[in-house]
Structures are given as structure tokens and as C-alpha cells.
Length: 236
Image 1 (cartoon, rainbow, N blue to C red):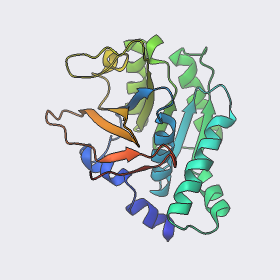
Image 2 (image 1 turned 90 degrees about the vertical axis):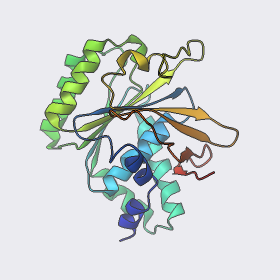
Image 3 (image 1 turned 30 degrees about the vertical axis):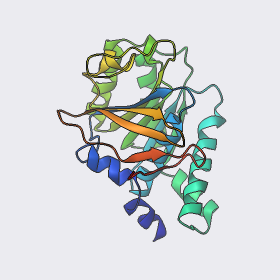
């Protein structure tokens, strides 16, 4: 099946290998970048890859427009379908949607107890057990260590991996001694994987800042194409 081929040849296999086999169940990971650099596209590509691998995705979005994330999935999937010459795109996309739920939350409702309640209700009523939770647009600048610890507890209790996006603010790009930027560095002990996305002249680079307990970090040979919004191999 072509979708299996899409999974096996996916550049996300490079990500998994470089971060010591993947993020892993019970762990938190984050893609950090300035606004508009491609965090959502990266998370959506990652989510589609996991679905092609047979996993269920719960995508939590704090976007103002509920249609925002669905449009991202459709756009990224269409690009992937074109790249792999996939036929019956609509049929395959609708099949993919069966393994994904999207939960829209207001940024004003940031108490973790309310967020967790929404997650648990959705899982219960939809009879849907996620393997991966994608959390896009979480306001780390306003978050506390206690809240991130609750996310970590959720990941461990549910045995899921949770990937976040974190916005770096242009006017506050302070870095700690490990090169981890604010506000992510406030929670670095709770993240197993930290990846920063950096604009280059013709693409977006991915830089590993933390990989589990590794002291020597390999170069992540991936890039994001700002035109197609796809993650691809980068061997230059």
C-alpha cells in the first residue's frame, strides 16, 4: 500500500532515529520558533506521519479559528499526496481523519484541570484512545512549572507522547547556558526533546537543543520547505 510506503520513506524516520528512537510514551517534546516560521506545519506533518503508522492523534489547538487546524491538515496532506503521486486523495484523507480528533480550546481557559477535563470527556464520549497528543499554540510565557508538570503527569498516566509548539518572541530571545531560549528554558527539565526552528535563506533549519539524557547531540538533518510546508531530508 502506498500509504505504508509514505510512512517508511518519511523524513520523520530521520527525526525518530536522531532523537534516540523517538520521543517515547510518557514524555514531552517541543518545537520552538518565532511566529510564522512553521511550527504548526511541522506538528501536522508529524501527526499525519503517526497516523500513517497506525496511531491515533488528539490535536489540541488554541487557535482563534476552529477551521485553522483542519485547513492545515488538508494542505499538508495534499502536498504529501502530490509528492508520492497518491491517487484517490479525498478517500485517503477521509480515512486518515478517522484516526484523528481535534479539540479547540480558548486561550482564556488555561487552567489545566479544565483542559484535562476536556481531554478526558472527549476520549470517553468519542471512545477514542490517543497514542500521541499534539498541543499547538500553548502560551508558555503565561504557564507555570506546576502546569507543565501536570502535562507530564498526563503523558505518563495515559502513556502517550505529547508534542508542543512554543512561540519565541522577537523582543525577548534570551538563551540560557545550554542555548535553550525563553520561555522554553523555564521548563527544560520537564521536556525530553527540545527542537528550535531557525529560518535560513531558502528553508527552515531544525536544531536539537535537548534529546533525553544525551550529552552529545547529533545534527538533525531535516529542513522545512516554506513553500510546500513539508519536512524533508537535508544533507547539505
